[in-house]
Image (cartoon, rainbow, N blue to C red):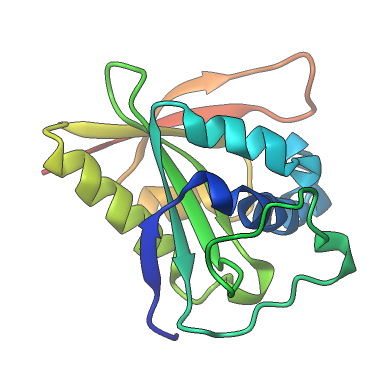
Length: 177
């Protein structure tokens, strides 16, 4: 894997992050876990970036990422980087415990350690801010996410059924030592 450059996202990154979300979440939709992220626009991402949270983005040292026609920008605002992002994650601190959310890795980079690096960085950030644990929610029967989080030390804490979906969610928590 190329060395990843990870930094905090800015409002100017919203179009590139929106493209990344659409591409990354398309694979979950193909597995039967549809998400509004497959249609997310730059304006919505920009609103998220204005809220109290930390969004990290990863670039891979000038490595080209195929953005294809389906990934066309939805805003005239350009990203601050010339390269597209290979991954992103967000740390939300609106709850009693920090919450890891919106982890996304470009399909060309899945399986290359990008998610591991981003989640490591978010966990480190939460630890540095004095938190004892970190939480997240994922699909209950996803073919690899639930196990991936468990291998990282996350344990299920709550199961969420929904009449609106054909699938359930599980909340997970990891102690930060």
